[in-house]
Length: 303
Length: 326
Picture: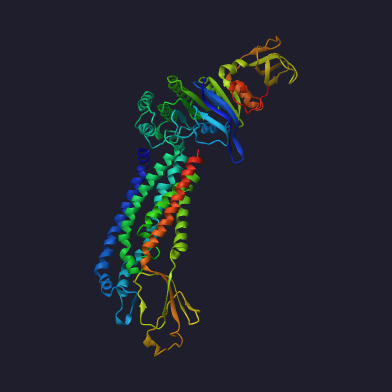
């Protein structure tokens, strides 16, 4: 399995503050990866490092096997707020893409915008936010990227436009098997489209892995009331969150096998619950071991 | 990149071109009138016949001062217009240079254009290059027009090296324009916002221009001194073209008697001297000046200074774009 994006001990500092530190991760090719974290967690910094807008202060980053540099082909990027030249017509932007890129499909961009009933001959400043996001996406896809990075692409869109954007995105990348990394501070936005998840919190990678794996290895256990931080439960690797009522204790856990203890009732949880639980507990983490990532991981493991 | 530069900047370019044409249209008739007055109202004729020597003897004919005064009476009020005209290169820097990087970053579009298939280095060199070339083309037209326009005014006022007059002709307008554009671009690459970039450009242009003109220009070459006895019938010809840096009256021991002025006594005045000591023949006028013949040397030196500054600013802006803006 090849890797579309790989970072090792990656760090970026602004003055004395690290916006991103000791970030080691790999996004396997062909995946649609969600990059989740609260505002200020380092998502934009990571994406800018990946497209070469920023240079690292520590560690390294490789995209499609290359060190990132602006102007690389095969990498598409939609920056936050989908910046476009507002006094350009959509058709001008397509011409611009054609002039600036060796690999470029004008017909694709034009068809896509026509399908979405976005007028090509109107200034993009006069389009709605949803339409502008679609124009930006069409431009990124017209570069026929192998890796597409999107920074908060749906943050400024209403729910309907969000759904439509993500549909178009998934349709666009399915054809070529494009690897996608899209960031959001809302898990709900990504739940439907992602099969890989990266959670950034306080400048560090906290959770990393395939969505199915993560959901399969995280459970909510409900059982009789017990003391806080009581002994281990068979089959549980880490307790991420613990809460008690008068009669019951519920644990949000990462498992390393089936939980067979009849005292506990295991329940599946949603991706959103999982992410929120981790974000609330910055000291815990779920990262593949060094063997699985094939790299030295800078993150301290809690298990 | 060329298409993109054109598409992005065609409006600014059109406005600047229109502005330049409007200024030219306003200046042209005035220039025609000045040339016509200079050629036909006696000044040109007088300068030709007396050969415009370094010294004139007022007693044997008055030089051309009277014609020059006549001309300046008519057109001398135009000289303050020079203050506006010297600021025109700055406008090019403000409206063409400052937005180049600043507006891009302000609107976030640098992240769109830099993640296409051209490197930041190529983006920067193409855009900076084309915009600079356009600015230089405008400046060339401006310089040709103003060199022609200011010529009679400079001749009647005395020297082409004089403040404001020097700045409006020859090659320096091109260098100022180049500098203004480079300063605008660099200011935008530092501030990343349009208004501060324009502020820096405005302040930087004025400060650099004033400092170089005031501290540098009088010293590009060692000034020449001439001593002329107070008692003389040969006076320096004010139309000969010297750029006077200072003049004063000194006594035989070298002590200054009069600062910032001259004193001339015709020899016959000594006979009926009513104020003893004023026309002491051992006292002399000391004039420090740059001769007219150095005009082009000074033009190239000053143009060189601003061209070097501009090159440094552009290199700095390219560095900022490649390494400091994300």
